[in-house]
Amino acid sequence: MDIQYLGHSSFIVTLGGKKILFDPFISENPLNKTTKVEDIKCDIILVSHGHFDHVADVEQVAKQNECTVISNYEVVNWFGKKDIKGHPLNHGGMVTMDGISIKYVNAVHTSSMPDGSYGGYPGGFVVWTADECLYFAGDTALTLDMKLIPMTCPKVTVSILPIGDNFTMGYEDAAIAAQFVECDKIVGCHFDTFGYIEIDHSAAKQAFEAKGKTLHILGIEESIEL
Ligand code: NI
Ligand code: MN
Image (cartoon, rainbow, N blue to C red; front, side):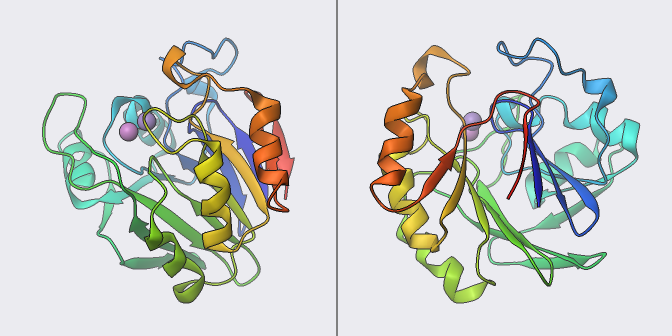
């Protein structure tokens, strides 16, 4: 699958011929100097939870692409009031669209919408086709629930894991998360955007290497085929 990083926890993953946009936070990302929201093309938007650094550009991107937002019931309802099409999931639930299966899985974090309203419970996604499977953890601590993923989903090919610490797990816990999901190829997210989450990239890579895993840290707009 092709994975393009748009900064923070925003990615466009091309899987099963569809462009899946995760957690768009582009216009307000202090590290983004190049990506313009109006240029983003996608077929579907997946939103892990309601925090501003995951939803800031959902409305504009959804409207310009006329695409569906998939998230938990509360996040989908909140965007529904802005005339955005949505498909609600809740934890443990799955939907299959155009040959792509999308399952909403547990995350340990908090959630509220940018206006302070209730955002439901945060989650992550496992997304797969017949050939490939991606785990996008969202904002989360390390949790034993991650061990359920290889028991309930196809073999995970690539995982996108938060590595920035402070608001989520740090890279050392994320390396254990990679063991829990039984995945060797990791792409890092949720690091460096704010002072609280600045990390040492080489130390992060070493933490994964020590467990026989590979951590990829991408620059904004950089793509990788994994
Ligand atoms: Ni968050
Ligand atoms: Mn966040």
